[in-house]
Image 1 (cartoon, rainbow, N blue to C red):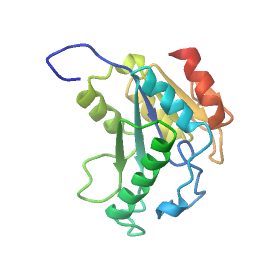
Image 2 (cartoon, rainbow, N blue to C red):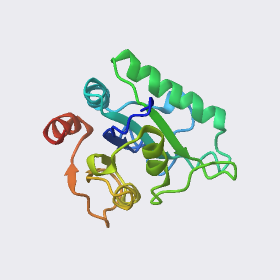
Image 3 (cartoon, rainbow, N blue to C red):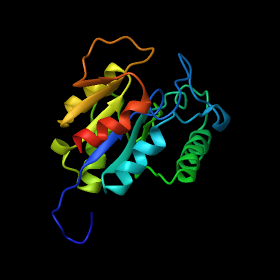
Image 4 (cartoon, rainbow, N blue to C red):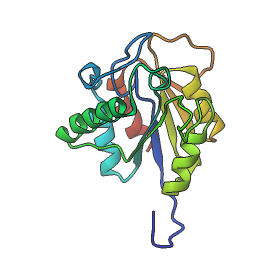
Length: 181
């Protein structure tokens, strides 16, 4: 927030693969036509947009660093994500991606750097903010950032780091957000 105000805002941080879109399994979403928005995500993001709660993606996209896709490919995938959300009246406020390349300004999860960078940029009160992820590294990142809580979407990944709350499906996110915000 600009204009010299010290008003701090809330945010919900979303992991991408497995939360925002269908999990690619052990591989990567490498092209826009492989990106499929999960049911319920647009509604959850629109709910946040309507309440002036920031919706921010924090994602690991190491396929770029491994040479499986380019930065331009990743940008095209994110344009598709934004387009699909826009069609449903929703939008993310920012996207932070760790790509594993030497030029990437971000650090790998569970390091909370992407969340802390967003908090500085948007004056986010981390104690009022949440992380939604499907992997231990997402939950650990949210904890390391000092967020109010963590939400795990149960999926294919093993669970060694418990979250504050566990949901079975992206369709449950909206109802959960209604209860906590």
